[in-house]
Image 1 (cartoon, one colour):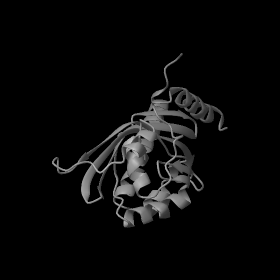
Image 2 (spheres, one colour):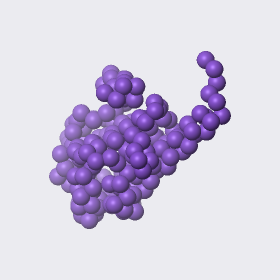
Image 3 (cartoon, rainbow, N blue to C red):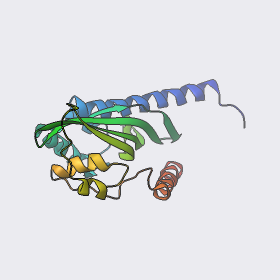
Length: 207
């Protein structure tokens, strides 16, 4: 296969740089918060799925705003690392950490989730925009801020959760969110393989 021309390589590098910047920008907008910037990162109607939400971006933004106002201050550290592109479509996968400090039954807790964020992207008249958001869950942990405190955990609920997001799932359930047990995770490799195949098929065909 002949090597791409310098112009083609430059265009590819610029696309990748814009995509990686957008992924980091979207994550920061969640944390600052910048609700306008968050919604502007997506094309209208883009699906967003997390442990506590499953719906379009137009509903995710007000739901996240309300969650934040109620004291849900998760922080996202995202490291875009891999993208696959064909013309005006691309997918991007990013190792990430989600961390949150919360209080349950009077005990301050730090909960951390190790994930990979995956998004479809499309090239629009104003540049690349996200067309979906999925988290692929790897593992998580929880600890009291004061190491002398006991964990206020209902282990029956924790053990009923998926092992890839059991503690985050427990914390969201304790705040009365419905936590899906069908999210993407390394503990279900067959489902994950099918997801990856579908994502690459979308890049290739748009379907």
